[in-house]
Length: 287
Ligand code: AMP
Image (cartoon, rainbow, N blue to C red; front, side, top):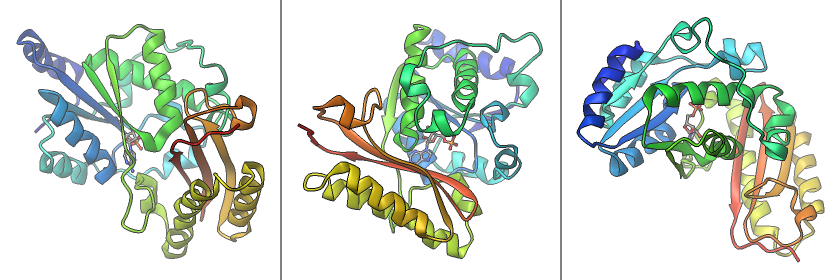
């Protein structure tokens, strides 16, 4: 594994592979790597000849300055983990490298409702920052396949729309969420949970699971209200949203009528740490 900070050397290296017809898989991350990230790299290794993982804490996607300041940074440990799973290249650029002066930063992608609901509503400007950084990273790495985690379900849809909008010749592969043994979705932010908050955080995945199991036999509105209040009653939890939506356009399913693919998503502060999670509601049909 070789780690590059500069575009020039990475590009030169990747050009050799391109010239030899090798496929490049790309896994963008913000570091503080865990098994969730590593699973993306493993899937990239299975599908592609060469795997590049970027580590860049993108300032433009943080709508809350404290969240950015407190974002965990563990570069040395990250590099060891990348080596342990056989990642070929790390790309660890500075902010100046990603955002040089004169870079066109105002990328307009029409996301429609997907851009304004849930994360779009509670983190204004967040997806603008995500689009900006992912487009820039894709322009630099020029991968054949981009690997994203389902854990950030809405982000996956936003990035797919962006790839489509710019007509980029890149396949997007969505990878399943990796969880701790007890069910908590792995997240770099979990490192910031104290003991009590870690316990409380488990309720997110537990309640999502209960909702998926009860959905066929209960009113969805009542289910959501019930679990929203149950989460909010916990002294360490403050829910931002808990929604059941169709998996493609993210519209609330009561408005869609019949859907075959639904998803339940949650965002909540737990002990001051913002966590998100979601689960598929398989073969779920609303009539
Ligand atoms: P992040 O470093 O949080 O920006 O995440 C980088 C990539 O890893 C994104 O595509 C995430 O969706 C993905 N990811 C984060 N957590 C998990 C997880 N628990 N399981 C699978 N993928 C994940």
